[in-house]
Length: 91
Ligand SMILES: [Zn+2]
Ligand SMILES: [Zn+2]
Figure 1 (cartoon, rainbow, N blue to C red):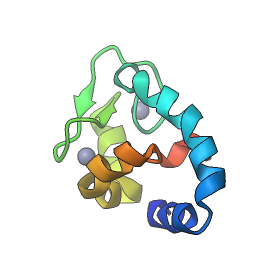
Figure 2: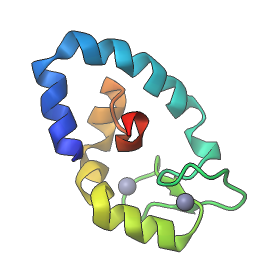
Figure 3: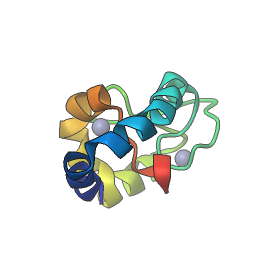
Figure 4: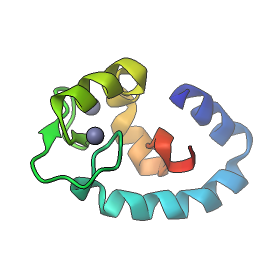
């Protein structure tokens, strides 16, 4: 589903560039909230593959990995730059 969003971005750049403003704000606070369920983090579980994804629990980390993060993990640096990293941003 993340990859679909990337294709959307390429096809409809203008609209998504506008949307990315909000998502970038989300990123600013990304360290404080679970990357998957957005619960506020007391003790974070970092992704095993990157340094920007953090989770509230190992369960969330594993579920996110299976659902979407194994795809976006390796692309994270690029998508972060584009401001469209999070699938949940427009969920
Ligand atoms: Zn969580
Ligand atoms: Zn990762």
